[in-house]
Figure 1: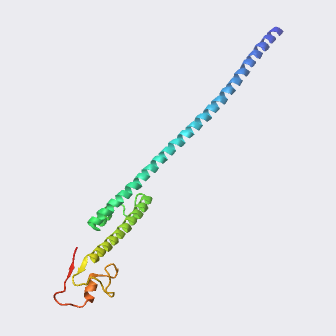
Figure 2: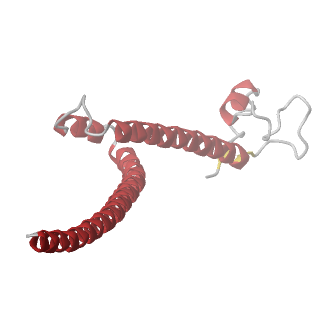
Length: 184
């Protein structure tokens, strides 16, 4: 019986060593799996972050393009409005589905500021054009009876106060022979 106990003990001892080695191997496998899982999780996080950044960049490009398009459309709209007068603006407001609530608040502000800039520049261009026309009118106005040298009390055509009409009203009437010719 002792022999039998030794055999059982010996066989259990061998089995416990085998089991112990298997437990150690399983523990190492678990550590490897955790490392692989952490690596995979990190890769997934990096992949998600890169996809998010890519989508963010695309949306920024779309916003830049839409801002450029709105600027371009704003300039076209201003030119069209200048051609048609203010009737186009009234028509556009009537047809707008949400006149008080634009779909994108930022785009509405951008459009409003862009439109204001265009309107200001158009007004300035109109003023400059009118001044240029007035200057040309003043330069082209010729008085036939004027002497070659102007007297000191007659303003020169370059004087901003000079106006052919105002000058004609202040000059004395010389009779029916005096004529003023205006060339354009």
